[in-house]
Amino acid sequence: MTLALLATAAAAAQTGPIIGDAFVVDGDTIEIAGERIQLSGVDAPEDWQFCLDQTGADYQCGKESSLALDAFLSASRPTRCEFSGRDRYGRYVGTCFRADGKDVNRWMVESGYAINRDNPNTGLYAAAQEVARSIGAGMWRGHRRAERTGAVVEE
Image 1 (cartoon, rainbow, N blue to C red):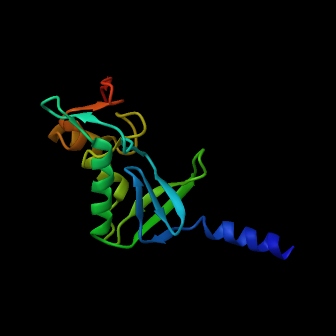
Image 2 (image 1 turned 90 degrees about the vertical axis):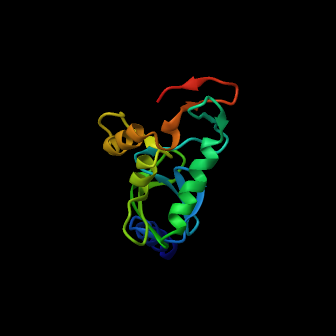
């Protein structure tokens, strides 16, 4: 009975925000205190993914996205994440904020390092994506490549 109560208390404690130093897993996933957190409403290229720049040359947009997220988080620690649930992989899904209050999810889309996960015209970060697209920021400076083999995906 005591173990069940402790397990329930621990699970309940995890429904509140998590605050701590964030470690970047990839452009839309971080880890704080051993918990993986998927940034809600955003989708970033995988670390292995390549994109085409404005000249048609390959660049590692996935790696660039991860590095940009790491630099952004490092500029104002700790990171606080508020959750809306868990994804199919068991990760928390939530919105994260730097110590200075800046919305990490929105910044990733606005800077062009991630895209609005939902419908591009109606999702939570649709306006932020339009800003990035209009100025050619991040991935919007060229085309995203689904695989290194060359299939270009228009976003």
